[in-house]
View (spheres, rainbow, N blue to C red):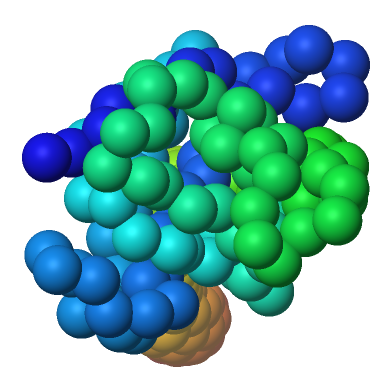
Length: 219
């Protein structure tokens, strides 16, 4: 027949202990339990626990993840034991106790476990914050990368437009140079024609003078 051990696991300030596992390890073989077998109970967020325990003697250990186990003491559950809290059983006189030192040690262990559990909670919160900060930084970096890509595309477009303008300017300069050479040739031709015309006019004048002289001689 089992005996119910239940209550609220509290620290020295009366606060419930969270993230803790109560482990019962059989210290000797009884009619229902084999030595060294292990049973465990996880208190809820309010520190409440409830265990139906077979009669026998058990070593009580408190476990918090990430911290060494804390041995709280030894309890003995008899067939005629009345239901009670873990504190009641740890504080009870047994054949191995001359006074309830186990209860005082249990209270010390509860305080230690409470501190360890608090440290775990703080570390978990810090880890979550670090993860959140890292996610925000990654998002910001992605935004900067997108902006940089857009700027690069805009710069590439501007460079293409500048190259096209430069090519157009070069083509216009070549056309202007050709026109200038053609104009120079036309000017030279005009000057040559002007000189030829002057020569022809001079020849005509000479011919006119000679003709007048001939007419005068004939008369």
